[in-house]
Length: 76
Image (cartoon, rainbow, N blue to C red; front, side):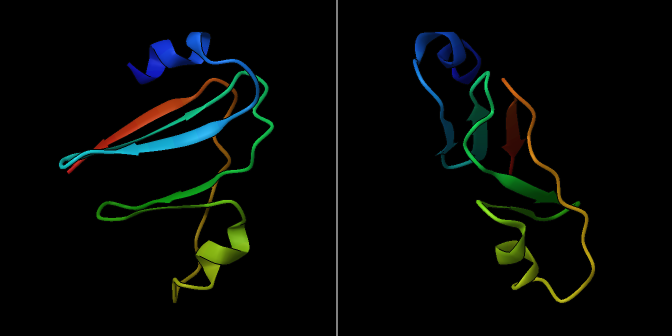
């Protein structure tokens, strides 16, 4: 459903959906809205700015910006 939403929605957007056992994010084709992700084996963190993620994690991290039209889903 998230993949098909990319063609159904107009404008620029980045959004997340959470269910009881999944977390998903989708980013529009222009990738204009900010989102930064950090992933490890047991943690997924997202924010609009990298500094927000770095402020809560005690170790050095590598973050990334999702690319245009990216959809990611994490299973718990």
